[in-house]
Length: 139
Image 1: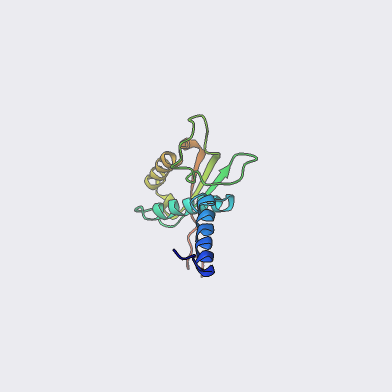
Image 2: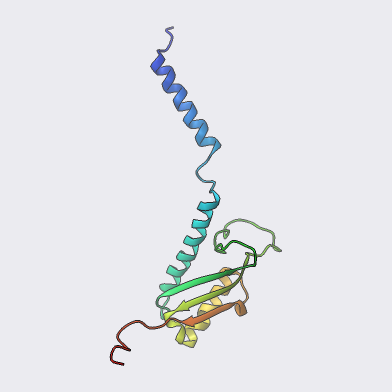
């Protein structure tokens, strides 16, 4: 049996090294910065879903974190199991929506957000978005 050449040995060593690095630092474990981006994208996904509801229109969501805590979306840990006593860290939500002038839409948004964000309804404030356009052009 022949001894493998130096090139083959180096390729095998490089492959084993790359495999070890991937196994010890898996890409599916997120760093703090990546988790922060995930929380933001969770809020963006919620805004996108609410925008698709009939009568809601454009939506912006602002989360108010507990004092001394970094701002993070309550949806970031949606699929992880946590103890019942542990709250999400969000004390309130401000929702600005185009269709919030309609009481039915406002009520439905409040009910839905209360269920999704696991917050009591009194901690969710929904206001109507200012209308853009040519309404005040001639004044």
